[in-house]
Length: 239
Image 1: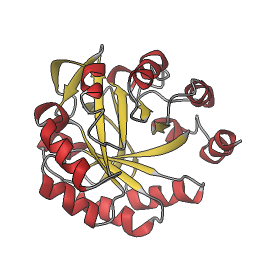
Image 2: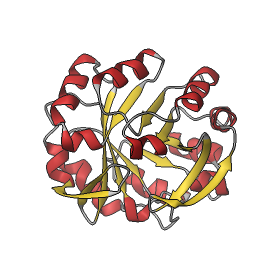
Image 3: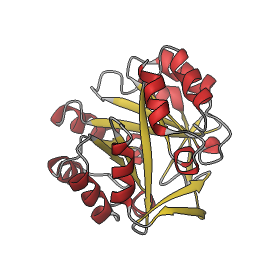
Image 4: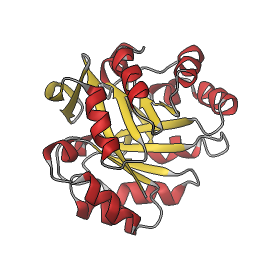
């Protein structure tokens, strides 16, 4: 199971939110590229970036720090937030991103996900953000009547690289991930599922790994707070 350190970008800084609320922001680093280098130096295999401003604006906002991270770090990087058209997808992938994450458009324009996955094999992931089992969009600001499993299954034949499943009520709250829901989703689809939201201890990582079906886990606040030692966690997951 791959551990993805998360860098959430707001106004050019590395931050974390609680429950996706832009008014509940903690700034962890004024230099996101320096933060990314710390994670890489600890041995991470991937980085997970979110353009929080972009998720609300519907277009990339934190391009400068993303590009600085790409320039500074040799590991593959995935990015979500405000990526909602082919031009933006192509621009990011040609600038060095390994993978783009499509969230809101997966609900509003699923044909774009299919088009992008066909054009860029292995480089398009679907981000499914859920509150009480239903998908939320536009930076989690809007709720839909779409069920998580139904949306995931609709992309089974599209060739997407992964599904990143976030339980909004667990995100940033340090209360543990929704292992039951994440495992159920991973068993319901053939697409690799990456867990996000609430991953706050080594025990959480071990529990996710031990399901045997979850491909990765994203953690942010716990790494910044020291609740998870990244180097130790990576070593444990590789053993």
